[in-house]
Length: 131
Image 1 (cartoon, rainbow, N blue to C red):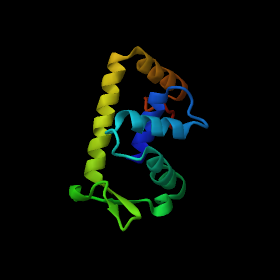
Image 2 (tube, helix red, strand yellow; image 1 turned 180 degrees about the horizontal axis):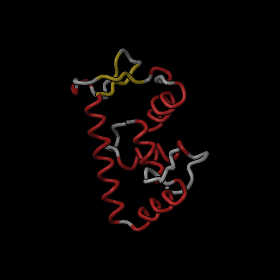
Image 3 (tube, helix red, strand yellow; image 1 turned 90 degrees about the vertical axis):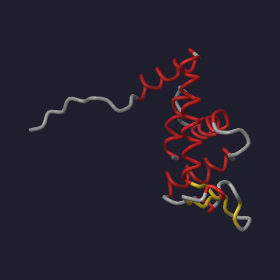
Image 4 (cartoon, one colour; image 1 turned 60 degrees about the vertical axis):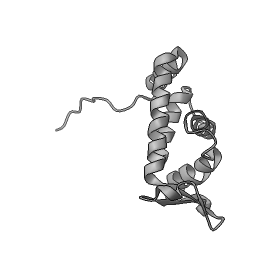
């Protein structure tokens, strides 16, 4: 889910994210996730950067669980913020849906997708010659 946010944020940002990944990532969360529920900077620094670069949750800021919606975004022992996988996924799905609704309604956001695609592409068909 942390990588899915990264991916969507890159298209939302449009231009190159080189040196600006944090701004794109936190901007997307602040724009499309439920207002006031998530610490965008914490998710970027601890979850996204920790998982992408160190294969761990940096600073142990988050505890990941599943099947316990009653604990989602609660603080455990004043150290860990609990992310319940189903709730986090639901919020990500809602953010994605809101983003694509905005893309359909806003030419600037559609242009950013086209710009990002033209520069970086994404999954597509490639002809390979296999000996």
